[in-house]
Amino acid sequence: MKEASFNINLSFIEDSEYAEAGIPEEYKNPLLTWIKLVFTDDQPNANKQGISQDEFPNLIRSMAYMPIKANFDPEFGVGGHSDSYVIGVIKQGQQEGNKIVSIGALFNDEFPEVVDFFKKELAEGGRVDFSWEIRYKDSEERDGIEWLKETTTKAITAVKHPAYEGRTPLVSISAKDLIALIDEELKERDEVTV
Image (cartoon, rainbow, N blue to C red):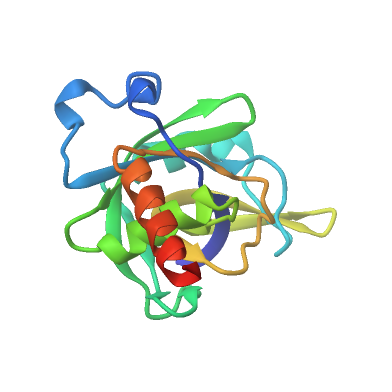
């Protein structure tokens, strides 16, 4: 079986957006940080590979409980696919127009430095991009693009250099403790400048 990688970007979910994001009340576990993202669209990526809407049901059916991964270094942020480890899990996905939108949960307790990095980057106007990994059994070349067939979701990995080049943003990330994080950062800056 062959593999391909694609990309995603992050932003924050406010508590009032949980229901809108499809996260039921019983899923509000304080040990999880929920994310909502555009998993893919039906356009080719920078690697000259694409997923047509005909393949969306395969990806959606296979994404539940698949890993969200990162290769994180506190000094440099996220790296690439190699040496990445599981930091969360995908809950579900659905098609919205020409895109798949997914919801997943990051493990706060096990990887607080990764979750804090994502939140801090977004709070400061930065980006955290992801590259999703799939398996596929076949492909078809059309106009210089390899269109993947018989796809299965393998994982989503935080990466520094995404192939979708910002077209697949993470729509939101839960922000229950975002204010505390921002306050702490401002306090640290104050202490440094005084």
